[in-house]
Amino acid sequence: MCGIFGCILKKGLVAPQILDGLKRLEYRGYDSIGVATLHSGIIEIRKDKGTIQEVTEKLKINEMKGTIGIGHTRWATHGAPNMINAHPHTDTHGKIAVIHNGVIENFLELKQELIEKGHIFLSKTDTEIIPHLIEEELKQNKILKLAILNALKRLIGSYALAVISSLEPDKIICARYESPLVLGISNDGLYCASDVPAIRPYTNKVIYLRNGELATLKVDGYEIIKISDSTVIHRDFEEIEWTLQESEKQDYDHYMLKEIFEQPISLKNGLWLQEQYVDLLTQFLDRGKEVLLLGAGTSNHACIAGSYIFSKLARLTAYPVISSEFIECYGSSIGIDSVILAVSQSGETYDTLKAVDHARMRAATVLGLTNTVGSTLTRVSRAYLIQQSGPEIGVAATKTFTSQVIVLTQIALKLAKLRGKLSQDELDEYEKNLYNIPYWVETVLNRTYLNIKSIAKKYKNSKLFLFLGRGISSATAMEGRLKLLEITYIPCLAYPAGESKHGPISVVEEKVPCVFICPKGSTRSEIIGSIMEIKARGARIISICEEGDSEIIQLSDDVVEMPKGIPDLLSPIPYIVPLQLLSYELALIKKLDPDKPRNLAKSVTVP
Ligand code: AGP
Image (cartoon, rainbow, N blue to C red):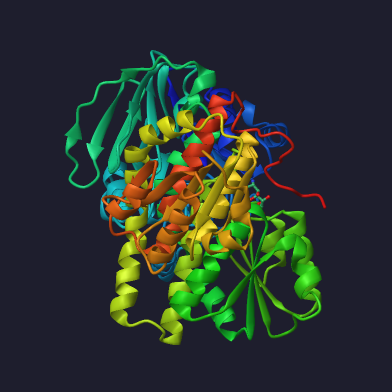
């Protein structure tokens, strides 16, 4: 996620404080940085691709003049990491500078509208339309705050943004919708930032801006209003007790837990994809004589879930393939009619890139789905999609898995529509349920965590876990197994429940915990049979099922009840959440660091 920081001081230069604030936001992940300050009636901007240290040394950012300024660390979502795309961005005449964290979904149509009015754009970013929009609004009325309010009302998507202008050089105006923004109040000046770490060294007096609010910061005070109707909000500051160290993860003990709880937001961002890129991938997939979904680890599990989704929605057979086995298994059979969709959060996984290189040599069409703009996968793909989950610091993939699945589902729905495989009612129903997913995940997070903690305590001494599911839930089972395996080191098995009687059931004995993922769906009667089979051998049954599912509940020793109405085909996204939390809690009980599991790296860039 990008980091934003704004500061207005009674005296002294802001640049050093802006740089310090941005350094405390580095953990959010970034690929370029920039700072704008206001002095002698002009806006000066220094920005480039690179780390804060590299760019500061190169451009002498710490020497910039001015007592008011804004700074930005960019995690690219639109447009590769480079100087032109780095923030801040300005209007035509350089009188308005804007920094932004979020995704503007309708930026292309707004950009076209502005181009027709004569605006010229330099970057590929969605953000750059904001200062130009404000410039246009200023033609209608000369008050900066009103112009910004009118501009914000045109935006669809998420934003936390800060604006400075040489037209009104005594203020910073900031606003948020979905992306976080916090204000800091001190005797020496006022601050706005993406979150607490950036301003903690200067004050412990903070105000959390809420969705749909705009704040005006001046050296002698602040004003908060509602964007919708300009109602003034009277909100006092809170005094925070966090130490700086703690606040880097906000109030979470580990990045993994923070990223698990970020999923409602990351999933919403995953629903605001750039339509034209989804269409492009869909066209390529539709033309393929054979489609293979390529991924390693968690990304492979997203591909397994994707194979069910593509088959059931678009009637497309898409083979999930583990990256490291791709060349041996399909290297000689793929060709010009093959389409390979490579899924990789980092976009740098060696096994996946090696497979992609081979596929390209065989003249196959390679498409990419990644979380990292500018990654190698984006450069070697014929077309690619950015899943927009924001950076994931924890080694164990959590929010990036659920984002991968929600993006694959959107592509499958597009393909289903293109191929006429679903009726309009079915398409509408799936579309509606897609937008319910972030809220279902939020409900699961709020409703099940206490229960998960007690289940973790109950099974903390178990030496083996099984994870079973049928149909698409076999993908959820495999991902749940991987989470537990990689951060608690407890040996785990996972496989489609129907496979039990073909061998794995031999490991089942008294008290072995067996996690069944059993949403209501077409495989329900079979999963009940599997549960009874395993239960008969003395296993402890832990079921993740729909609330009130009495038949499953009666068969289970422990139950995690999920919200009603989640379609089986979309279930991996909400149903993986309790398993993410279970692995996290068991790691804590075993006094392990969930963020840094032994022997593992966040991105495996070696053979
Ligand atoms: C998952 O929790 C692990 N971090 C690992 O399996 C990971 O999914 C795998 O290395 C693939 O990474 P990628 O998505 O960046 O390609």
